[in-house]
Amino acid sequence: MVNLTINGTKVSVKEGTTILDAAKSIGETIPTLCYLKEINEIGACRVCVVEVEGTERCVTACNNFVEEGMVVYTNSRKVRTTRKTNVKLILSQHDYKCGTCVRSGNCTLQSLANELNISEMPYDSILEKDNWDMTFPLIRNAQKCIKCMRCVQICDNIQEMHIWDVVNTGSRTTVNVRGNQNIRETACTLCGQCVVNCPVGALRERDDVGMVLDAVEDDEVITVVQVAPAVRTAWGESFGLSKEFATAKRLVGGLRKIGFDYIFDTTFAADMTIMEEGSEFLERLPEIKESGLPMFTSCCPGWVKFIKSQYPDMADRLSSAKSPQQMFGAITKSYYAQKLGVDPEKIFCVSIMPCLAKKDEYTWDGAKDVDAVLTTREVERLFKAFFIKTDELEEDEFDNPLGESTGAGVIFGATGGVMEAALRSAYYLVTKKNPEPDAFKAVRGLDGWKEAEFDLDGTDIKVAVASGLGNTRRLMNAIKKGEVHYDFVEIMSCPGGCINGGGQPFKDDASMVEERRNVLYGLDKHNNIRFSHENPSVIKCYEEYFEKPLSHKSHEILHVKHV
Ligand code: HC1
Ligand code: SF4
Image 1 (cartoon, rainbow, N blue to C red):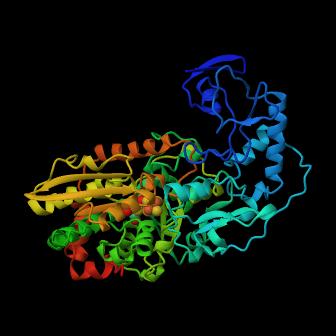
Image 2 (cartoon, protein in one colour; image 1 turned 135 degrees about the vertical axis):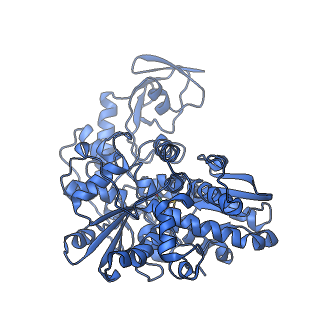
């Protein structure tokens, strides 16, 4: 153990502890800006500086370790002055028009400037020029970038896509797309992990709120909105609502106030996806066994973009079933339009997703199943624009029939959920008996690469589940080298799955992901129906329209060619 004194208090911590963690252990706050635990500990912003007795210059607390007998001051006059100067220097290269910034009120730099009582700026601002393609779903504002390197580190070390880099030299040194390429020329999967980890407003989603409101306000247009599984577990966070209060039904209550005509649930379409994908898996199984190559899930558009650019020779192993988002749009504009007796052209289908890649997915096949995608964060802005008192919202029901869902559909939002839901129904399709609902729970959990083996009525099925693109690359390489053999593989681009999607509220600590996950599994556990094949609306949808999974009509409307 190492003994030191922090702000007059004696502390004893393990060797190798940073000053930041040592201070935290006794409840002392040292502000940080660029720091991301175990991902970005480079002290670039110099906001976490502290004074160490006997040293002339202040040192960064995030990457300097405790030493025996050290005497540390975290908020002395010297520290406060140095910190203030450092933040002013950052602001001098930052476009601090907070009034028009999406991160205003939720920006680490803005809070710091307030906390440090910075009310005037002695330096002239030097701002970078910007020529970003504002039609791309991910927007970078160079003038707001503080070069903290968080996006670079996330993309290099967790997602291993290497999209961002330090570019230029000398005083022009900045962060941008590697090699100053146009973002559209890169393999960016739009996972949005750089966005959720950006501490300021330099990275964000394209704002599509305006186009959704245009549709809502047009009396000639029928607006149908779908809510993704992972949105229900996170939407209340930015309003400071508890998980118990911020239910899916209260979100429905808020959306009703905006004026959408029909409010439905993506989890209904997740159940439809399971019917199609589960049936496809069983149909492809003999070939899978023969070739030794798996079928891959295809509901994560970040992953679909990844496989097409990084492993194009494996893209034919993707399930042809459309993702729930796309299936929902396709069903709305066929089956549901017919039920309503309206021209599908009159329907404007909006998705609320925890994801940036979904803002791209809907444009892929030109089918116009979905017309606009809003992230969870854009819904927050929509609610604010309508002055909705979220803490007073009443619960309201999803509309029917596309609002009826099961526990199996809800767990899609967490890594392993799609696989578990598919296995529950595949078991039924093979044996005509339901398994115990938790029979396949071995695929749950936040580990980056999991595998499990199950007996499906005498056939041995080996499955794998991965989330995060670095983990995915390792898994794909192992498959290609023949080091591992699986029959069915689920991949989600975002570490932990959609609960940690690039469109979710900004989070400060990783425990939020576990909390969001627990909500989804709780909803599954307490749902009366836990099997996609038992969703009454799904059964009816087949009876009235699609006939059966993999029927001619299903293939035409619910499937897509990936290669
Ligand atoms: Fe997802 Fe999915 S789980 S991909 O994360 O398959 O976005 O939530 O809606 O489509 O259902 C996202 C979430 C979502 C789809 C489903
Ligand atoms: Fe989007 Fe979910 Fe895929 Fe992340 S894991 S890219 S949130 S679909």
